[in-house]
Amino acid sequence: RKEVEQDPGPFNVPEGATVAFNCTYSNSASQSFFWYRQDCRKEPKLLMSVYSSGNEDGRFTAQLNRASQYISLLIRDSKLSDSATYLCVVNVKSNFGNEKLTFGTGTRLTIIP
Amino acid sequence: DTAVSQTPKYLVTQMGNDKSIKCEQNLGHDTMYWYKQDSKKFLKIMFSYNNKELIINETVPNRFSPKSPDKAHLNLHINSLELGDSAVYFCASSQFGVLTDTQYFGPGTRLTVL
Image (cartoon, rainbow over all chains, first blue to last red; front, top):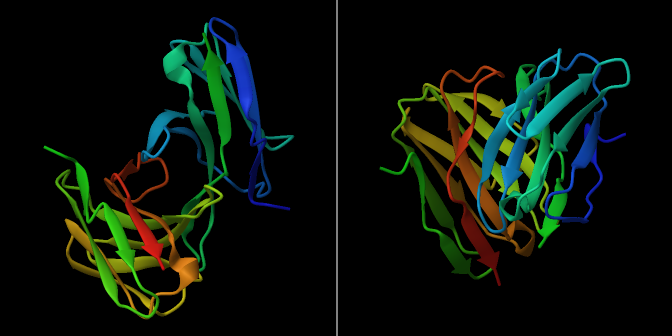
């Protein structure tokens, strides 16, 4: 099983719609969870951290389900500028025994006018 | 006032050559990273340094050698380049290197090996 798995999409969604992605992770000991956003041919940027109780930032809501080992991202009232690849990020053990962040392969979202 | 900068942005070279990519951050962060993003967009960590000390070294061929002359710089030297090294290489930094820190990425270096 991959450490972090995401549906690659693409998700093609009309402007104004609500869209949700899930991401599953394999290590039950993982403690840190994030969503990063990567625009085409650009670097990844932090969108939001994911907290145990769930958290919201404007139109974006992130949820964590530890029992089922998945995190989710919900985007409400989607805008054209939301078109990007969304990367799920989870901490896992590195070869040195300390922790590292592992990125999923991303879910590609295109908002259609 | 770029936070994390990398040079060069594009690098096209022949198989067997040796090349270097430079990274600098002006955020005052303690920890820097090198990531590789392959053609399938899979972003994978290669190395991490905290205050010039190597703290993460994933399964990377020893043709790749990172060097951190000070905590604001982390360079990547690649010997005997192979076709499979073609990818986008991202440098990143974070304040303390703890998992709750935000990682700030540079714009990437697109390496093409012919």
